[in-house]
Length: 439
Image 1 (cartoon, rainbow, N blue to C red):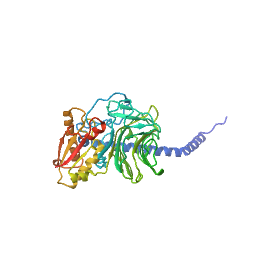
Image 2: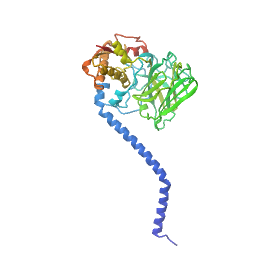
Image 3: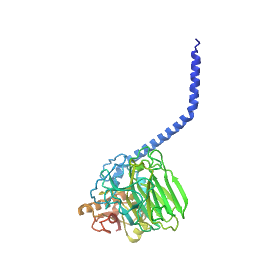
Image 4: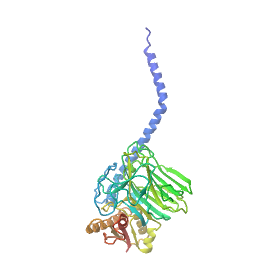
């Protein structure tokens, strides 16, 4: 029997190994690049987390006074329940986002300012759990639920090509804003790239897209970064469709707040404090837009669910800075607080920034800040709450923008000076307001 020498065996092994290396070189190179990108994302998130932690103490005094800097980590909102909520006073809101504090720079540069004349508000406060909300319409199903222990009510949007809209909003003006909260449960790494919530501004008063519309999609995909898409139709013809690169995978797990500003043809969209869309000519010129529509699609039936709450539509166009200088007094319900507390919501910082700009421009201006609440809760608690909220606004002006505290005084009126009926969610939202009065 003839046997191979050790040298020949070794040579054969080297040749085989060499062919394997050659055949898999491209695969290893691709895997290396993928691992490198994953490492970069991990590093970026860690740097962001460490930068946020360094600002906790300052932010706590502004946004969450008395919290002592204790924060919860990101999580998925709890499953919906059918429990009736307990009545609570003050500003209604969804479950508190646990994504952690943002940097002061993010808050101070947030330039969204809500409209000053409220046209529509619904937190489903007068609707029963399990019912479809009385102010809305749909060609699909849907019901009011609560999530976990929070008393906030949410409308579950059924997935599919189903339309939800508010039929009793009058013709929208040339300048207006739209705000709402979103929540999702059951998302995981397999959540589809088609999972999205879309909002359409349309000239159709039923369930069609309309010949003139402006449309934006918020992605909920979890296995890849899917950007924010915007498109339009002008006289039945699509003029714009574009997707802006963005990674919202963590954001949509923590009850994001969406803000939209329409200024004639210009369309801007923020998710939390980040502006993703700013298109100067998206809305059809001269079009009669009178319907705000929502669509949820691509979510797995029975497993992945998406919800909406706190929808507010307000007419804009009045520059609060000019009004304060000219008239010496303004009142706004655009400064929002967590339910029953004086914690300022981040989306309110655009208005506070405008107040700062007025005081920066004219050093002779001193202001009195007056808080007002709705009638939920006792008179005494609402009076105390209104004063605490005014103090929180003052604290933001001093701590974030460096306004001299001696130029600011605070007061609270509780529920004693309502401007609307406290028997409806819309009226309560109007009564929850902050006044700035020149002294």
